[in-house]
Image (cartoon, rainbow, N blue to C red; front, top):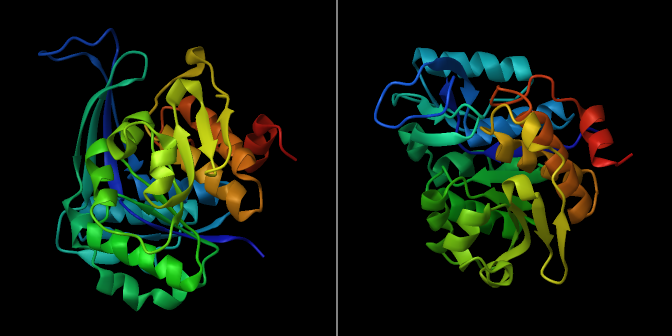
Length: 301
């Protein structure tokens, strides 16, 4: 039976401008502007579906054109939206400026819609959440929902992985107590510094059983609290087209490995392979992402 993962998190429309020459601040930069489906939670679910995982997305979408755009995109990707909440708020939007190498210069994220998600919405879908092989949450959702999910996962023996999203939003993880350790968290280096002063073991002490640190061009660090292993990157700088969504792909590859019974290190390597596939594409989710290619790149059967 196909593994089933429910992702609880943000969905938005990505508007990205990439400079055609080295970025110059304070002025207009000639380049290309693209519009695509995005959002951390939505991207993770999209990547999971492309990796052969039955993915459901629990998010909030508006009644506007952007909301319809995302519903259509999710349907095309095979993402289940049966528990998504419809809101009068505007659908989320992410506006990013990339330099001529594909690295982000700056971005603005308007995610007000997801702030309308409440524990009552999650409670109404409790039986579905309890039946998932894994739950994935991003820190776009309110603190109350993160706290509810941590308690729910502990009470029902479900594995919950949390993606911090950003330095500012990762602070939500320090605003409530956890009775039992959360299965996993996936910070980048900046978020690790904000959450635990850069110390992985301190993050374990703060209630996370497994930690996978995404380190950009340096790969990842996978720690189960006893052993920490460096996982090499699988993409060269020359192959970078656009870094937007690379972390989301890495989380999806990691989750894919975990729900299929791989070790934490093997799963983290799958994450690096998925990120490499994404980085070589200018889309927020690489349309050419393929399960066989990701496993082959990771060196796993």
